[in-house]
Amino acid sequence: MQPRTSTQRSADRPLTLTRRGRLLLVGLPIALGVAALILLAAFLTSQAQAGESAPASTATVEVSVASGDTLWDLAVHYAPERDPRDVVAEIVELNDLRSSVVQAGQSIAVPAAG
Image (cartoon, rainbow, N blue to C red; front, side, top):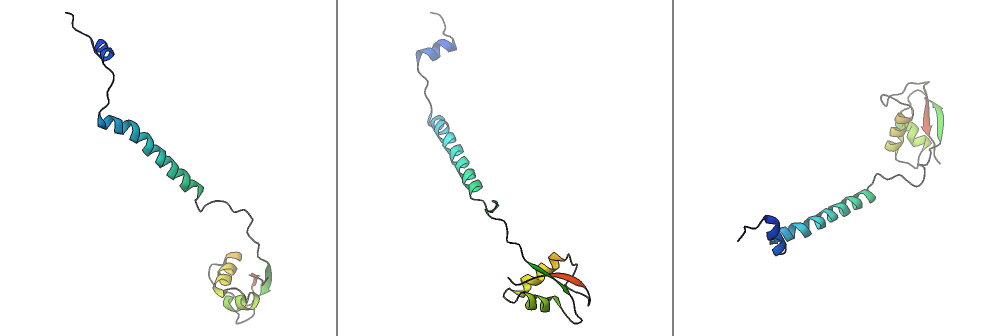
């Protein structure tokens, strides 16, 4: 009787998988598919998507600051329907101011009501 080689043995009986092997063969592709779906869903629902319309531009008015005027006073006077805190922040940003202090005679852009 001749000894069999490994190729002869595998030809005699079919391949059998253990429970762990079946779990790996079936579970791994399912787990990868679920992970891919979660990433796709996160990408499609992210908040960093571009808007459909351009942001509304704010009309501005050039104002010469009078003695005793503050940014708060200007915000209340030129945009009474808006929150003065938001308007003051916008004035500072529009004019690239380092602080909220303005000098008499200074010309600044102020968002107008509209």
